[in-house]
Length: 318
Image (cartoon, rainbow, N blue to C red; front, side):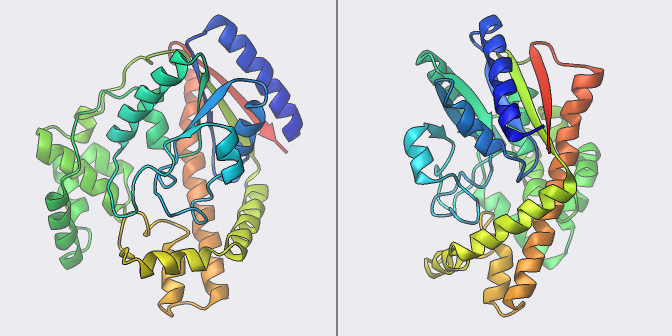
């Protein structure tokens, strides 16, 4: 299906959905480089939309090129939320995102507009789609620093600790996913309950239309390579240099993400520019693969056990 057809069919689906569910919300999902952002912008031409970003990296201020934020022109035309809300050295959890997103949904609906959640961070989307009953646990910098120090002294220390207290959650994570593992330990440290026990799925707060875009893997990889080339041409290296010159540590959660850590390694002379670009391509393609795996769960739900008050539609772009 061509992109223009997806826009028109999505428009029809949303019109039907809103007629039956005036209090409903729309979620556009799938992996990076599949056209989600572009689709949301096109649909905003037909509906009075406010967009809520579910991208865990676009929350950071001063990080624009490597996070592939939409242009200022689009931000000026279409209200966007959950973009540029914290500094690169500040923590922000999925619980905070859920709390803020639910508040914003209510505010958008009070203005008689359509809330549309867009982009790819699966856990963020799941806090709305699965409506987790999440514990109110703020980040604990002292606990995190202690865990990070122990991890430096003994690689996979935090993963081994998580396996002891919450093997089900540990099974979902790679041992190198230190940030997510420490958050799971933090939840247990603060509440006495494991993340598995704490994240209880509930019925959705309001009806949801889930629009997924599927694109061929090879075509996605070509688009990823093209996008990375554009980022480098558009001063990605200079953006990372500026962040480091502002004394933001390369070990920060924000800068350790894909698109930034590879440039840091280039600036540290670990790779030449071609090696850096190849590594960035490889890591982004691997990320897209992980995203596809995550979002296939939604297709499984659609086919096997659809959630109450959730409507699913998946388009194949090609």
